[in-house]
Image (cartoon, rainbow, N blue to C red; front, side, top):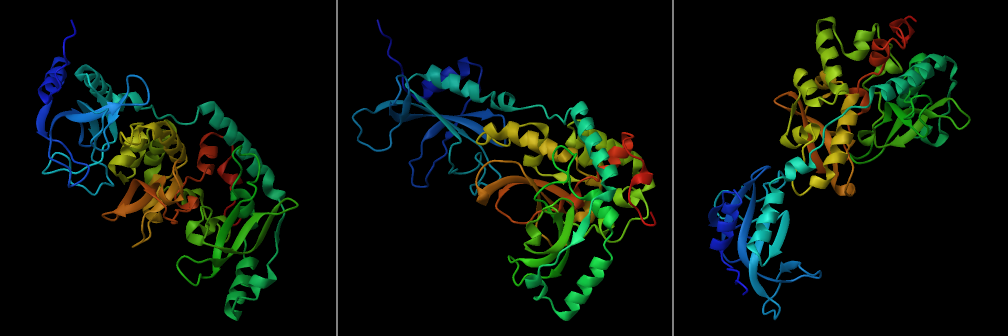
Length: 429
C-alpha cells in the first residue's frame, strides 16, 4: 500500500523539526514586488542574515530522472504541488532591506525542489554546513620555498651593481614638452640614483632575474589632459639588449602598480638609513617584527590589527579562509590563497602614509575571477582617518603602487642574514 505524501507547509515544518531544525513561519521572500504573498518555514543558516526558506510551490519534472524544477508559466500539464527550498542571504551589494524585516523582496542564492519533504530537509541540512564545507585554512608561502626565492633575490641584488642603465628619450614625446618641462627633465635625469634603480628594480617570480616587460614610473613629466587620460612619464624598464633603460612613455599613472614617484629614495633621493626605507622607527621595531611574523604565517588579520588597520566584513572573512558569501562560496580557496599571498609581503605599518586625502579606495591587487567590470580585489582606503581595507568587485582603474603598501624585501633579506644593511644603497655610499 502506497502512503500518500502530504504536500503542505505543515508537513514541511514537521519534517524540519524531526531533523532537529527550528523553523519559524512567516512571509516568504518574494522575487518580484508583484509576486503573491506566501507563508514560508524559515531556518537560520550560517552567514550574513542567511536563511533557508521552505514553501509549497508548483513544480515540474526536471531533465534528469528524480530532478524537479519550478514551474515558469501556468497552465503546465506536468505541474504538481511540491516543495521549494531557497537559500537567501543579505549581501553587501544588495539594494533590498534585510530579510528579517518587513516585506522582503530578494533573489535566492540557491534553490532545491522536490515532491518529498524529506528531500527538502536533506537539502536544508546540507546548506546548514555550507560555511564549514567551503572554508579553507589560510597558509603563507612554505618557509623553504620562500627562503630559496629570497636567496636568489639577494644574489641578484648583490650581483647587479654592473647592470647597465642607459637613457633613450623618444623624440616625439620630447617635442611635446614645454621649455620648463624639458629643463626639469634634464635635471631629473642628471640626478638619477643608478645604484638604487639597479637594486630595487622589480625581479621576476623566481627572484633571480630582472622582471621582463616591466616598466617603473619615476616621475610625471606632463600631466594627462583628462582624469582618464595618459600623461607623459619618465620611466625605467628592461632594455632590448639587456640591462635597464630610462625613457619617456605615455602612461595612465593611476592604473600602474610599479610607481616610484612617492618613493624617491629608490631612484633620486637616497635614504640616510634603512629605517627610513622600511618605515620602521626604532620605537616600533618590535611591533613590525610581530606584524611580519603574523603575515608570513597566514595571520593577516592579527598583523592588520597590530598596525591599526581596520577591515570590512568581507575582507575579514576572506583573510580567515571563510566564504565571502553562499553565492560566491566556490571562490573561497582562490581568493583566500591570493589574498594571503599578497599580504605576505605587505607593510601595513606604512599604510597611513600611503593614504591620499579625498581619494577613493585603491586596489592592492586583483584576487581573480569575473570580467573587467567587476574584478574582485582588496582595496585600501580610509575610515575615520585611519587605513581601512575592503573587499569589492569593481572595475575601478585606481591602484595603489606596490612601493607604497608592500614591504621592502630588504627587511626580510637582512632578517634572514642574506645581506647586510651596509650592502643597501644609501646616501653617501
